[in-house]
Length: 327
Image 1 (tube, helix red, strand yellow):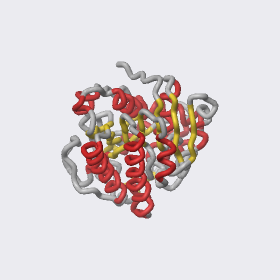
Image 2 (image 1 turned 60 degrees about the horizontal axis):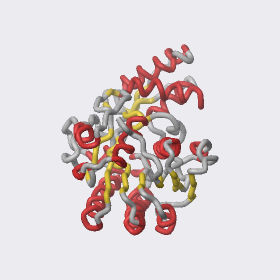
Image 3 (image 1 turned 180 degrees about the vertical axis):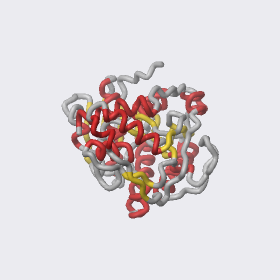
Image 4 (image 1 turned 90 degrees about the horizontal axis):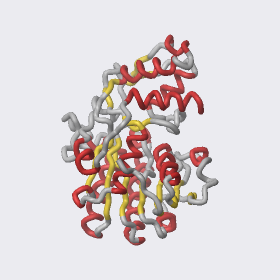
């Protein structure tokens, strides 16, 4: 599989974040000129330490809510990988206005800036939260339900705007519905930390993780390298039917939270055997959470040649090693 893209100028919005910084690193190492736009609301400067010294990497500190920042960032750019957003369902429930300003207003600014700059293609981070209250499994791209949180609404609105801009202005756009992404550089701290880095941090401190509910809720956990592959394939896609649509980006398997904790304890115990004895606690289910999530990745396989290499177990082994060496 040829995933090499070189000699292009690529903007990564949210490039100091978890997913964005990983994308920046790969693109820089492949010989592209990479521009990172980030306001550091959730991104971290330390994620860019190895990149800031590179001649083919440029950091623009700015905000996608400011159209002029977006215009500055897309100047002369071939492609845009739009990762900037305020994630987290609980965050959006607590503060729906800011989530909407960033995720909808900021997204629209990027679309307008990309259109006006003549960008060849924009690939953006969509979300599995768009499936909402749909109970069908596996999740297929053209069957969605009603959103269950302000965050989910914002990500669905992104898809609607993308569709309109592709049809009205001829902008090539691909949306990637991420399913529970995890891996190196994902922040284990803060009120809205994702479950895997949060649990890893707690286990390493000898604290008992708290599972929301009884642990039987299941997710299609997706390692960062699978996500990088999907983004590169989206930039390289040449088939007409592969563009101006959305894809599930996942491994195509689901594991319960109880499974997740079992694997984490096992892999972390290789570094500290006392972790095997840490007890698990159970709490209330979380508002806005769906019970089960499982992606069909058939569409991405067919149109993008997507072929994820990292299962939950394989990805967790890599992630645990990274956290042990870096936390």
